[in-house]
Length: 105
Length: 213
Image (cartoon, chains in turn purple, red):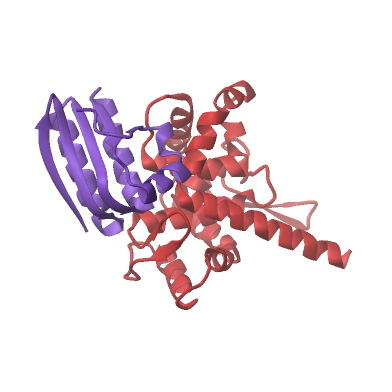
């Protein structure tokens, strides 16, 4: 299960994601991220409380980033914990999506 | 994905199935079935493992049969065990995908004899719209700098190890986009696991054959 919350800060829409982004939660994750991307030109996904991500979760993130690119919106992932960061590194997600150490605002 | 993988391998002119690597077609079929199961939310993967999530029926008898085989292997089979079981059924998978494409009017089945004794099967393309679409998606995923659709990432990671990209892109294009292709192939755990297992199988079969020579 995941929980998502949103807040606006200095021109950025911050989507904070907590929990496990597995197959069961992938659809909810994609919906939350896409919704933020469709309504805002700068979106940062705060993954500091995301404890696990599976391939289904990764695909959701890619689809949201793809939607942002189509709208020419900025989309970044921030504050990834080491376990999730390892998955990002193995999959080479940083080849497609900007990953920051900290929130941009 | 299974039908799309087969369409990538069908030569539009000769109607034959092609792969430039001995076990390339097997890799494509096994990878495609795993991707279909993932897209149907029946399996999921992390960096190390593939897990069965749900054994309820899908809309595909082929996927249901593969899922049943996987679930019968016990509580903690290795990915290699699953891949091996599916690998040994690769001809069934290919046959079912071809039958489906024939029933949709996309391919035609032709059987002839060469030198009076050798049966030759061909699958000429009747309606090339789907095949062109699949090929174009692969080409666009590689040549563009945009983030590809996840299905297209899967297609590239199926086509590359089979040597099918050489039929879609020039040598110069492939050389120029090598880094992008590697990134796309690396993204999915299924691609990495299936490639490792098929390489392992190739080595085992090769060593086995050498012992009988």
